[in-house]
Length: 240
Image (tube, rainbow, N blue to C red; front, side, top):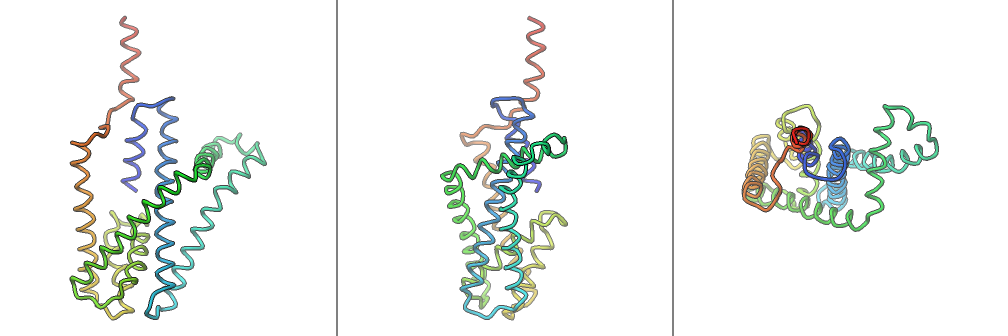
C-alpha cells in the first residue's frame, strides 16, 4: 500500500492538464486499476494451478481459492453495478460523500471501454505473475524441495495476496506464515518454508532496487513538485 500511495503522489504532481486536485483522482484510479488487474491475474493463476495440480489438495485450500475467486468476481461486478446505480438515481451524486465514489466508479468504468489497454496490461501482468511462480520453482529446486512445479503457481499467488493484507509491515511475518501453512500438506517443514520465503523476498527486493538506476539514469520524468510551481507562478506575475 505504501508503494501505491507513492505512485499516486508522484503521478499527480507531474505536469498535466487541469488542476492538481483533479489529477490526484486520475492517478488514484490508474493505480487502483493496475492493482486490481494484478489481483485478478493472481487469482486466475491460483485457480488454474489448483485445478491442474497433480497432487491431492486439502479441502481448505480448494475452498480458499474458490472464496477468493468469488470475492474477486463480485468486486469486479461492483464497478458497473455501482455506476449504473448512479446513472439510474442521479440524486445519489448530490451527496458530497458519494460524489467521490461516483468519480471512482466512472474512472473504473472508463477502462472497460478501452479493451486494448486492458489486454496489454493483463498480458504484462500474466508475464510478471508466471515469472514469479517460476522464480519460486527455481528457489525450491535449489533448496531440494520435492514440490510439483505447478504447485508454485498456487502458493506464490496466494501468499502474494496474503501479503497485501495491511496488518504487517510490507507483509513481513504474513509471507513466512503463509508458506509454512501451504507447504505443510506436502510434508515440507517450517524451517525450509521460512528459508524459501526469505529467499523469495530477497530476490524481489534485489530486483526492485534495480529500479533506482532506471529512475536516476533513465529517460523518465523525475519528481517535480508542480504544487510549488503553481504557487510560484502567481507571485512572479504579480511582481511583473
